[in-house]
Length: 86
Image (cartoon, rainbow, N blue to C red; front, side, top):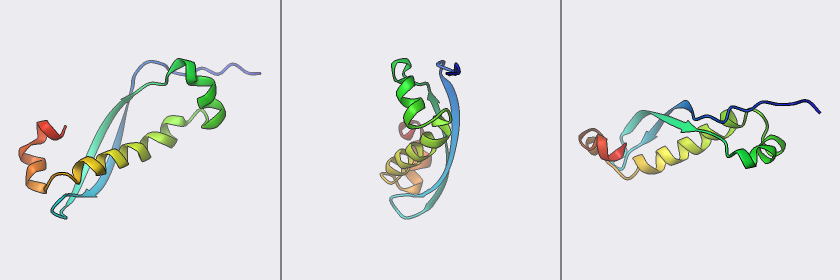
């Protein structure tokens, strides 16, 4: 069995998405995610998802969360309440 090394320090990943606002305007957004695996779950992550877990999972989760949050605001609120939305 070969030894595999995983990075367990927090790492950034950017996700870009286009989604609709509450008032049906199109918004193009970028989301920066800081992630790291739970060390005790590394064998499970490797067996069930693979070494490229971050590229396989983070974009879909990030897009879903981003869309659900953006849908709560209209386009004007996204700009005027940027700190709150962030």
